Image (tube, rainbow over all chains, first blue to last red; front, top):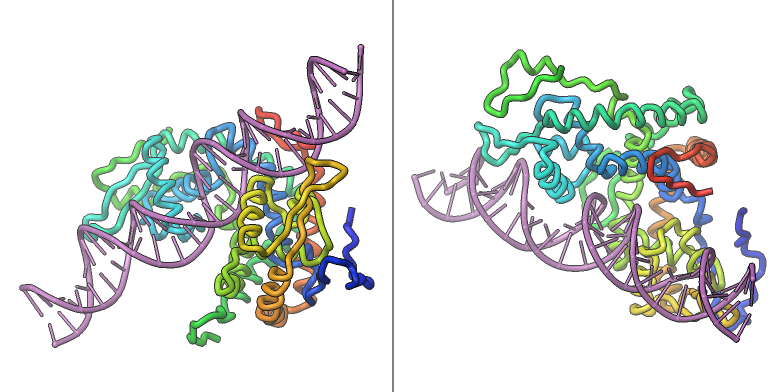
Length: 175
Length: 175
DNA sequence: GAAATCTGGTTAACATGTTAAGTGATGCCG
DNA sequence: CGGCATCACTTAACATGTTAACCAGATTTC
């Protein structure tokens, strides 16, 4: 049910001040659209992950680790799209649960090397079928072709915005 | 059977033995695409908001309030797409900063009525120009028509997935 | 080759996401 | 009228997002 907030002629004589600042319709803003869409998707995955004692981010990390042998922490953060502090906390937890293994690079003692453990792989194998089934259902429901198009448009958006300079005090010109 | 990884050293031959659990390519998953796209967008807004002492969620709330006279807390949560607990905390903070005003409904003492204050409106008027300029730049860069298409596809995705049943042992049914 | 600097990673501090439990007000049913 | 499920939040507890500060190891500089 769409709420009608279309500004007709709200009388300023009301004791409350006028509330119309010239801005886009709130619900149509791009960040909101993306947020709602993502939540609509994740809502279906979270229960399954939760049944296996995993959060969404922990699952992202395990999945990223499952596709490589070992990986540096910084690179893992990039792939799993997590900030350093979040990743540090999660890795500490996953290590305590023996789902991953860590060591330091011989050549550079600053770098931490991470890999998934046998136990972690087992967990992935337990979660993957349900996860894939959900994804397949979504694809059927939305349409495989349309989904591919959407992914392309999202990638294009990312690429497009990466060349816009960020506002603030940064003077770096790029593009 | 999956080979257990040795924490001592990695043979060059092992680098080829990438652990393969049958799953989609990680970076192409829909949740990741949506997350990255949203972050690519928000990255441009956050500095401006931060300059005005606002977080993204606080800004969402103020914007939602600016389009109505007063609104119930639950309805505000729906419009601003925030969970109850988050909203409670943020409203407490915004009220302490005198950016909003609260009272209870006479007819139902459980319901809280929220409205933006003059100070809140002033803040919005200070932020809106920059925010709109950023949005306009994004629209030019990506293409207005393409952006509208994207929004439509995101709305369609939402709508599509809302009709899928949620899985999991723990019944997370939500009519 | 020691000081300055940089880099990879962690900790800290605060705000929000997420689920569960708590609280007071309302409505229903007997 | 009174018990009780429900409702509209609010608190609590834990995990993550976000920025800043920190620290040890590595690199550069003089």
